[in-house]
Every structure is written in structure tokens, then in C-alpha cells.
Length: 124
Image (cartoon, rainbow, N blue to C red):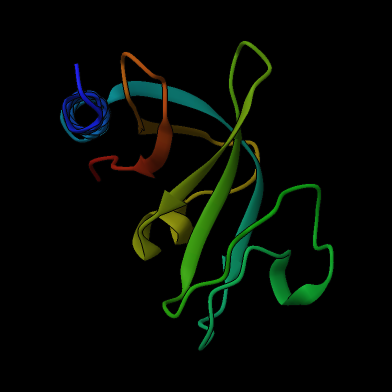
């Protein structure tokens, strides 16, 4: 084998791995879950996005990435003790209080377990 064949094989393997990972993240069905709200956080809109705590100061034990749009976030404790950040719609956020049970969908790749979203999608 010459160098160009090895390069081509490596490229094909890396491309296949990237495609498989992307497929896993985009097309895995969400898990329907429920938990108890332990904290509610409203994040005001900002003009920049940063991976630092809200406003540059530690607001709680959870790190929230600020975005240009406002966010309504509930920190939810599961029966197994795990906590998740659940993004809510404004109308759900307003009707739920700390201590309430919330139903939501957790999106996670089934093969690589890449967690990328948990969203409150309760029906009123």
C-alpha cells in the first residue's frame, strides 16, 4: 500500500465515524422522564454567548450558558438522584413551582450517549 491509499482509508474511516455519531445524535428517540423541580432559573437575553456562569458570577451550583434569547430553565432532580437542566416554554415555567413534578423529554444519543437537550413538553 502506498501513502495515498492509507490516507484515503483513514479519511473514509473518520468520515464514517463522524456520520455514525451524527446519525446517533440526530435520530435517536427521546426518553420521556419526570422529576421534581428543585430550582427555577430565568436567564435574561444577552448579546453574547459564553461558557461561563450567568453574568460572570456564580448564581448557583449549575453553569448556564447565556444566549441571545431569554431562557426559562428548571433544575430537576430525578428519582435516582441525578439533576438535569430542563429548558421550559414560558407558559410552563410560569405555571410550575419549586417542588412540582415536571414531565419532559431527554434527548441523548443511544450508542454514544451524547446528551444534548432536555425540554419540558407537557400538555396543558
